[in-house]
Amino acid sequence: MGDEVKMVPALCTQCGGKLTVDPIQETAECPFCGASFAVEKAISNYNVQNATFEHVDNVNIDMSGTVHTVLDFVGKQMSESREMRKELRKQQKEDEKEYFNRFVKIGIPFFIIFFIFAGIMVVVLNRIDGGEASTSDTEEASTVNYDVERGRFYIDIPNPAGYIWEFDEFHSSGVNLDSTKEKNGLHYEVSADQSFGMGYAVLHWQDEDDPEREGYMIYELDIEDNEISYVITTTEVSDMSEFHF
Ligand SMILES: [Zn+2]
Image 1 (spheres, rainbow, N blue to C red):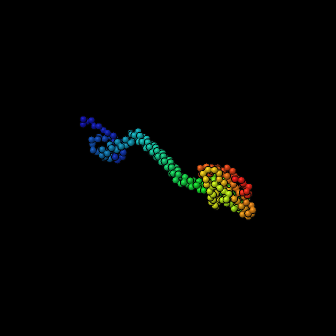
Image 2: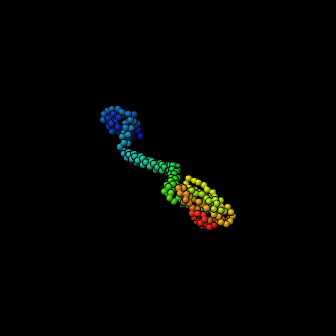
Image 3: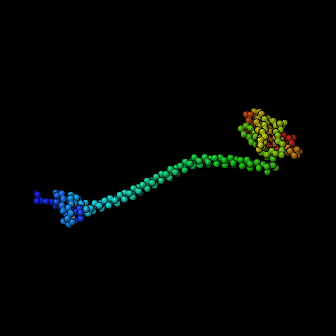
């Protein structure tokens, strides 16, 4: 057993020469440079270098590992940018939602206010239009509108200017006469003074500038259950003697 010395490869710690040593020995002498070196160290030197060259495959694996790492890194970056895009889309959606909410909160009330305002303007402008129209309609001051509604007879004179208007108490009969003067015209309301039969509402008009010009509008009204039900006839005369009740 003592003869069977198992020599192992080593590298001289001084000159790097390749040699073999007896691992049992503590020190040896380099045949190339003659230096005395520690056997253990020389063996270790050899093993390190050997590993470097002999395990190139491992290095490759390491390299591919590095490649993997790089790919992992890229993949991570990609997934990160995917996450970022996802986050961005989420943010966009939230932004859109917020814009919508803002629209609902501000836009809709704005539109409601706008339409209300527009509606008011339409009404106001129509009023103004009506006022202007009536000014040019002065010639037709005798325009009288009438209607029966809910048991009452109504007379509307939109533009009474230039004429004196009044119900003729003497000639009217079977009805109650009531009038209201408003900014935009005269309004007369006539109700029944009896339960059944006929009633007469006589409206007298007279030209303010020419009192000779005058006339009577006679409305013959049907009365049922203390209510005026309809207008039987309308007659216009210049003198009441022309009308036969
Ligand atoms: Zn040496």
